[in-house]
Image (cartoon, rainbow, N blue to C red; front, side, top):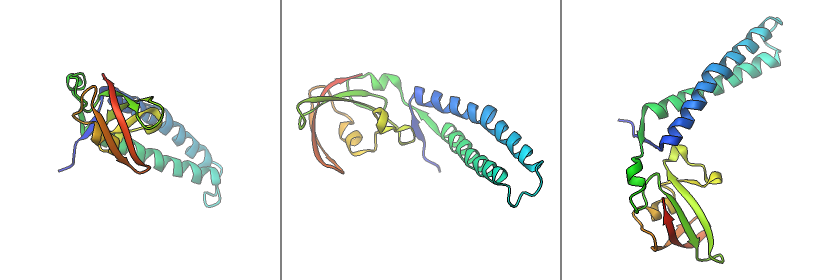
Length: 157
């Protein structure tokens, strides 16, 4: 049986919006582009036709991935995220004990929704795993690909 995909409510909404845009805007536009390129005749050397077909395949794959994620989604219980203990959906502010007490904020999300560039890390990542079950004031050392990192939990939302 397929595993559930853990999503926050906002992550689910983001997927639904992207899925709707792909289905109602992107695919129809590509269909029009393919139709117009076909009208030009010989398809074997028609770059626009070949490019549009390639993009159509990519978008069809993305639509399938997003639909699969929604079909298998298990939403994070928001009450769990606000319990004072780090869990999926929690936003955690950390003090980086190795770098001048810099403050870092992460939101723990499922792997499908992870976006480290926007401070959303997977609960399966090294930092995510180490944070699970911790409370404000806890200090932890995490083995990351870049070496050991030391943090103190400042707040949990």
